[in-house]
Amino acid sequence: MNTYEQLDAWIDAHFDEQVRFLQELIRVPTDTPPGNNAPHAERTAELLHGLGLDAEKHPVPAAAVHAAGLESITNLLVRRKYGPGKTVLLNAHGDVVPPGEGWTKDPYGGEIEDGKIYGRASAVSKCDFSTYTFAVRALEAVAQPKAGSVELLFTYDEEFGGEVGPAWLLAHQIIKPDLMIAAGFSYQVITAHNGCLQMEVTVHGQMAHAAIPESGVDALQAAVHILNALYAQNTLYKQVRSTVEGITHPYLNVGMIEGGTNTNVIPGRVTFKLDRRMIPEENPAQVEATLRQIINDAAAQKPGVTVDIKRILLANAMQPLPGNKPLVDAIQKHGLAMFGEEIPALGTPLYTDVRLFCEAGIPGVIYGAGPRTVLESHAKRADERLDLEDLRRATKVIARTLKDLLT
Image (cartoon, rainbow, N blue to C red):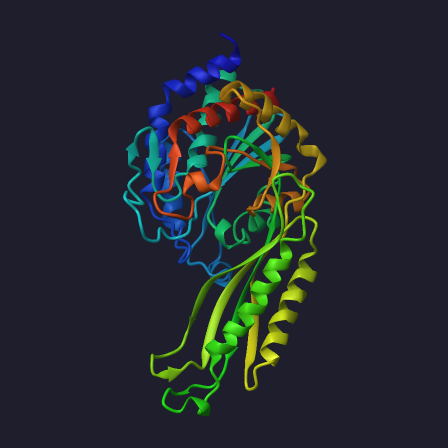
């Protein structure tokens, strides 16, 4: 039995333990918002300690956390140094959107049915807390590397842009890896992704009694006018095509809207939040300037209306760095062996924290446990789930990849 087969056998022998580890992670909620995620970090550190992996705790100062729109953040870092050589960092995030409606399973139950584990963050990306942890355990038990280092980084603000997670740790030089892999899915290795601009637009009119509507200025009608202008622009985005395989065109979504005080009152204020996905070829500053112009021009067509526009997130696109080739090659080789099919290197319309590492000159890719598409995983929808065989095989791919990189 060669070393790769020994790694596989160790993972098989400990797979029930790995699944229980993941269940415990799912059972501690990390809804973001509100983003009170320090308790999950404490529980994760306890579980890691029980596996012989001691985690450094890096709590972010409250002022920085609150400025990011969250309540509490403790980042976890496990350092495993084997000898001189490169440091490979494995990063997964524990924060998730709230469960929402329509679940047929307990979103925090970690229930298993028909070979799948259910729960919020089962697929994105508490699963890769377990993928990476047990890959490192297998590596140390079997390959016993004598060169390089591995770092496990578990963060909690990916939904809000990573500024008090990886960005904060990089800025404070707490982490300085040579290569990195971030949580993803099993059937492709991601080397590029879209950027994301999120903005909050508040439309101000003048409240009035519904019996005398002419005495007010209807902020909702004005907001509809602005939204129509934005949706018209969204249609034009489909004519712009990216050259990156796996990425199509820019697009815009309005995901939240609120306003008004009562049914019989002309609304004096309406607020909506928009999400603009940017392909790697776009300039974020130009995208933002264009959106602001569209909003302001539409508002100017409604007498008595003013608007406030606030940027709430700017995540640049991930641009692949040439140094990621060893990561891509290893994952593709071992992915083919484990899954019996080619693992293509693609771009994705999602945005992730990997961009922060690439912007710092650290080559990175996205790979972990999950299906072919976000849709299949039910991420951000009811009944999020993960096929446990994908988890098992992805753990083997990561363990084999680490063996190649560190020996």
